Amino acid sequence: MIDCQREDGLWRITLNRPDKANSLTAGMLSRMVDIVMEATVDPHIKALVITGAGDKVFSAGADLDEARAGLATSQLWEQVSGGIAALPCLTIAALNGTLAGGAFGMALACDLRLAVPNARFFYPVAKLGFLPQPSDPGRLVALMGPARAKLLLLGGQKFSADEAYAFGLIDRITAPEHLLEQAAEIAGDALAGKPEVLRRIKEMCEGR
Image (cartoon, rainbow, N blue to C red; front, side):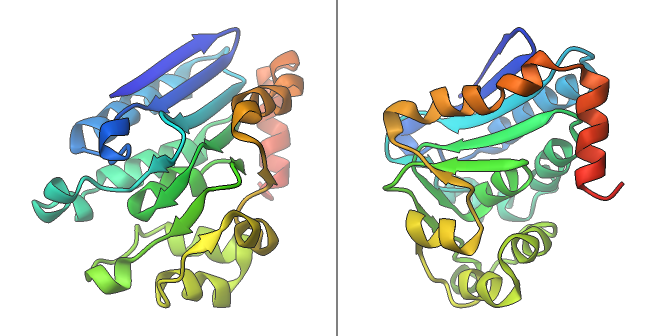
């Protein structure tokens, strides 16, 4: 349910559960943690792309049955997003469709976010009675400011791709047939570079 392809310094992770809107189970999150840990110690990785299977939904967030059983408050979410954020390479979320709920964490942790025109963005924690992942509000505020973060988290508003782009939540809107191609094109310079240089550029951009 989590596929990982690796080629010439480029890793591509695919959430592959399209029959369930790529909703995330504890097993899938654990697999994500393992992959990110492997990427952390790989001296050759230069770019990592995360996408979803299908043409409508990147991920609907937590599997509802598992969320009710405790997954909604699991530490696995932060382990995934924290691990992605700490990677020394370029990270890109190629959002092939709607991004919802807990799946926001891994997308927000990436350096860049590309999305298809029909993507929608919503995070209905207030209505469902859950807190967002601890790091998500801060990352949302850094991208689009406190008012729009509250519009999403407290107001429960659903953003279109155009709104998400205007707000700074995503960086480009891309036709579905070109999404992975554009992610690979953006990763091109990083793939041609040296891992230690990429790491330092990323640190400089983040004020470290």
